[in-house]
Length: 95
Image (tube, rainbow, N blue to C red; front, side):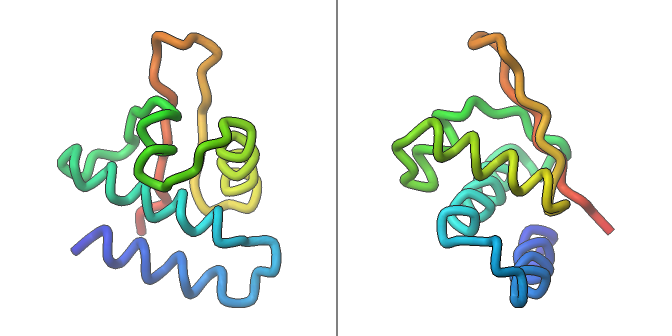
């Protein structure tokens, strides 16, 4: 239920945000699906390839760009790691 509230809130927030593309939406939905598979923890710890696989985004550059933008625009907090053996942290704004 919590994921549904996050998704509904996201869609309400992006309704008039021209910066958000279908790629951003696919990544956000994939993050919520991944979060559901991890018992709704906040933050989630994920490798980019895990989210890219769910969202069907093949380009690592596109994924990184959209994640940085979702963070910059205030839809989530993205804490990437430069270490390929560690997962990045993604925080959702829960209200």
